[in-house]
Picture 1 (cartoon, helix red, strand yellow):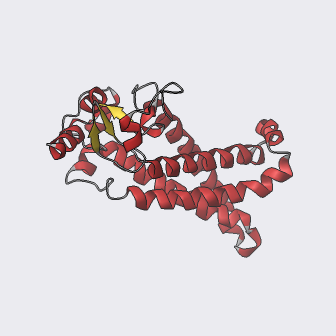
Picture 2 (tube, rainbow, N blue to C red):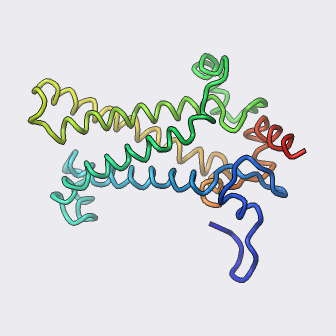
Length: 229
C-alpha cells in the first residue's frame, strides 16, 4: 500500500519492499517483503473469520455475529475450516520467520524478567535487533496457542472419535486458549498502532523510517546500515 498520489512515481523503498528485506533505501528501511506481509494478513484474516464465526457458537450473547455469515448453521460449518486455514498459514509463517526469531543467548531469561516490564514502559533497548526478545517470545507463544486451538478444535469437530473426558477437557482448553489468544491479539494490535506510531506501515507498505528503527530497533539499524557501507 503506497501513500503516493495517483500519477506520481512509487517510492523506491516501497518498490524494493516487493522482494527484499533488511535493506536501506534512502531514509527508509525495508522490514517486510510482500510475501511476508501477505502471509501475515492471511493469518490475521483467517483468525478473525474464525473469531467471528466462533463467538456465536460459544455463547448466545454474540449470536448477532452469526448474521454476518448467514446464520448459526453457516458459522458451525465455516468455523472449523477457518481454523484449519489459520493453522496452515500460521505454520507457513512460523517457518518463514523462524530464522529471524531465533533466541540469542540470555534473551529468554532476560525477557521473562524485568526487561519485559521496562519495554512496556517504552524505555530504550539499545541492542534490539530486527525483533527483540519479547517479540520472539510472543511469536513462539502465539505458535503454541495456534497448536492448542487446532488440537482441541479437531476433538470438538469430530467428537465421536474421542472419549468423553477428552472432549470435556478439549472444550475447557479451547476456551482458555482462545481467551489468552484474544488478550495477546489486542496487545499486538495496540503495540503495532497506537503505542508505537510508524509500526503499522511495515505491514502495509513494508517499510519503516530511520528514526523509528533508531528508537525501537537500533541494533537492526546498525546492522542494515553497516551492510550497505
